[in-house]
Length: 153
Image (cartoon, rainbow, N blue to C red; front, side, top):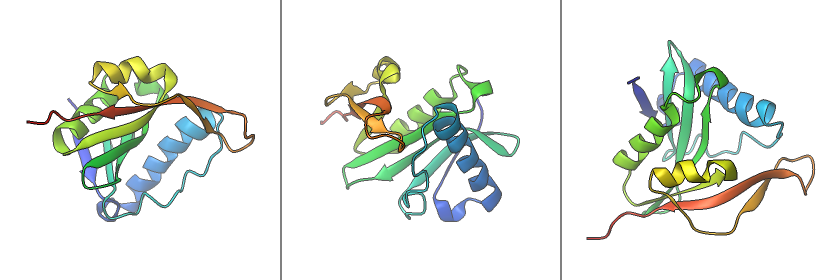
């Protein structure tokens, strides 16, 4: 398995972070034709974790984890480069988060990935909604809120 990197913003070298942003923009803005404010201020928060797998020096699969409270962390920006999909990298990143993060995990899954997340132990916990793409209030990508609940002893 490829090495998983797990770092806060201040420990990531600028070239690597540039490549992380390129990956996110290539997937979410260009490929999905969804212009939105990619630079939302959360990347630089001291508690945000950036987690990725790299090919040579460039990240090819990525996600970030935001702390929303002491008991809850939110997974977001799950992206894998087009040429590296269906190789289990995103699943490895999600499993890494499950194994290294305490408390419940939440995420807003693109609807077509709901079953994929369910296979890893997430459950739907709300009504589907459209995440806007910025150019039209009524256009967006259908998402499903999901949660990974920890067993309470």
